[in-house]
Image 1 (cartoon, rainbow, N blue to C red):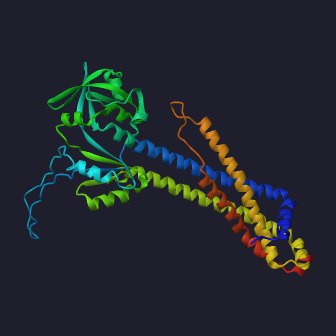
Image 2 (image 1 turned 90 degrees about the vertical axis):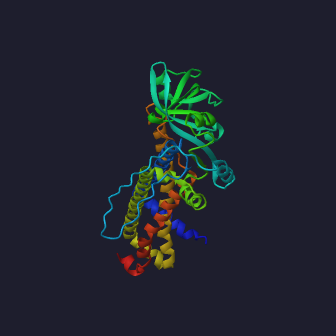
Image 3 (image 1 turned 135 degrees about the vertical axis):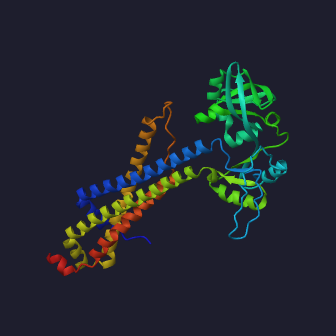
Length: 407
């Protein structure tokens, strides 16, 4: 329903007559909107960057063979004591049974972006007198690249995994004195083989860079004594937050040990939840401050404009029209403040990305104010303005014209 021009004209005139108060409250609303928008964009960018770095080389869901367990001793009747002790069984490398069939089953499943077979185990990397303990990972390069973005992490050489090739972590290459094209020896138990480093990669984590050697799947299977097998099937999802639901669904279908990234990164998930809760609390506090600020200014405006309100009522203005005058004032203050606040938030984001840098000189992490966030924050400011004006508007609408004019 379109509001009559009378209410708009009176609302704008009241705001113009109290310019100083209007400017103060608009600036307050703009500051509140800027804080909410900037904090929202900052936390979203921080969480996205944290997830990207943490999950950049990790699967979203992992399928492994069940653990070997020792059958416990018979339960004794109450009161009798057992003198036996059950020791946990050592867990050797075990292959996921029928992993090729499982991979073919999962490849076309909606929501699953890639299924990457992996055989992983410990070994030694040797070159000249240098010896380093490493984690060997045998992969199919194209599938693993779709999961971990391996080619984007290459800092030297070309990511290639032909027979006899290897991709090496940057810090490990430094420790072994390796450059792309150099050869080194890999040893696992009594088995050893030589490999040629085709690329050096930076995973963004020191330990990964110091311990990672990526081999062709067949070469790692032979080195680790697991011919034709894989220790896990790593799954990448279109939506990383759907991992628990996907893992739960797979547990009902497959007799394997299945974990989501939330299961293996509980501390990270707690930190992300704490950040989200903190952001919500900040939004609520700032919104409450904005509402109180608008309400206090409009309450003062009602007191100051009692005579004008009485004259308007005496000239035939209805209670509804007076009510709408102050609601429009609150809405205008909220709308103008939200526009200015969003512009201020964009300026703050620009300054952050321009002057705050990481240790390598690049941006600390990407930060952007999305249209969806901007619209939500702007709508929040508008709603807060109208809600804040509700009590002063009702107070103004209840004024008796005769008493208001005499005051």
